[in-house]
Image (cartoon, rainbow, N blue to C red; front, side, top):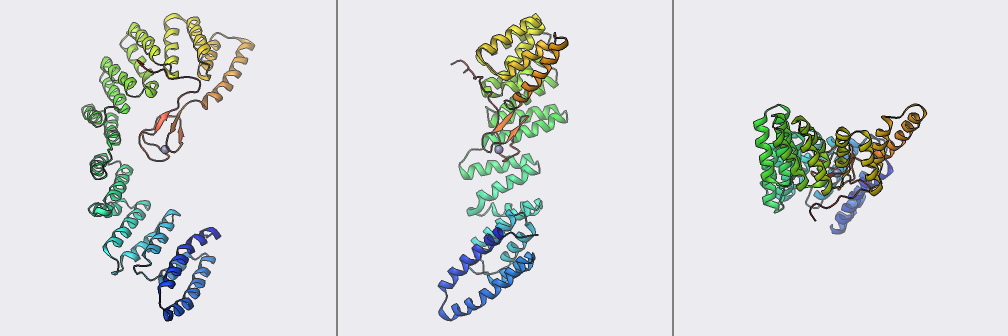
Length: 397
Ligand SMILES: [Zn+2]
C-alpha cells in the first residue's frame, strides 16, 4: 500500500490540529513534555509511512493520541479517512480500538458504532452492520442515519419487505414521505414474482405499489405485463395506457407493448385509432415511430414514407431521418443502396447521442430504463432523455 504526499498530508492534518489544540490547553509542565514527545512519535510514524508500513504508523498514531474526550474526533476522522480510501480493515481497527475504551461517553460510543457499522457494510459484512444499525436505530440521536444505513443493506441484499418496513419507520421519524421509493420496493417484489410466474403474488405487489404511489409508472407497466402474461390483452392495454397520465415521458416505454397487444387481439382498427389519438396529444419519438410502422402495415411503404417526411418537416430530428433511410433502403438497389447504407451508419452514430436515459441527480447515462440509478443509487431519478428538437406536446392543455 503506497502513500502519496497528499494522503500523508491528509493523515497528518487532523493530528496536527488536535495536537495544537491540546498543547494550548495543557499546563506548562505537560506542555514541555508533550512538545518533546510528540515530534519524536511523529517522526517515527512518518518514517513508517514513508517506508510504506501504514499499519505500524497507525499503531504509533493511536498511541500518541490517547483516547480521551479531546481526541475522539481525531480518531473518528482517521477511521473515516481510511474507509473512504477503501482501507476498511484499518478503519475497523481504529473504530474497534475506540469502542474498547471505557472513557467514552454514550454519545461518542454511539457515533463510533455508527462508523464501525459503515466499515462493516463496506467490507461486505452485512450481518454485523445490520446488528449495529438495528441497535443504533433505537438511539434517538442516531436513529435517522441508522435507518438510512439499514435501508442500504436491505437494498443491497434485495430484502424488499424489510426495506419497506424500515422506510416507513424512517418516513415517520424524519417527516419526509418515502412513498415513491416504497412503491419501487413493491415493484421489485412484483417483478420477482412475475419472473417466477407467480402472477397472483405479482398482482398483489403491484396493487400495493399503486396504493403507496398512484403515480408509479413502473407499477402500471408491471400490471400490464401481468395482464398480458395471463392473456388479458384489453386489461393490459388499459394498464399501460395509465402511463400517459402518470408521466408522459415514459409513454415510449409502453408504445410497443400496446401495439403488440392490439395485434394479438387482431384489432387493427383499435390499434390505428389509439395511436392516431395518442399522437394528437403527444409528439414523442417512440410514439411517432410506432405509428409509422402501423401506417406501413396498413397502407404500405409509400404512405409510411410520406408520414415520416411530414413529421420531419415540422420536427426535424435524427430518429425520423433514420427511419426514412430505413424505409428507402427497403426498395433501393445497387449504388443507391450502398450510399443509403453509408448514410444510415452515420445517422445511427448521431442517433446514439440523442436517445437513452439519464439520471437527473448524478448525470449517469444508460441505454435502458433503470428505476434505481446505478450511478448514485437513488430511485426514480433516471428518466428517458427528451429528444432534441422534438417537443412533448402537453396533453389536454
Ligand atoms: Zn444517479
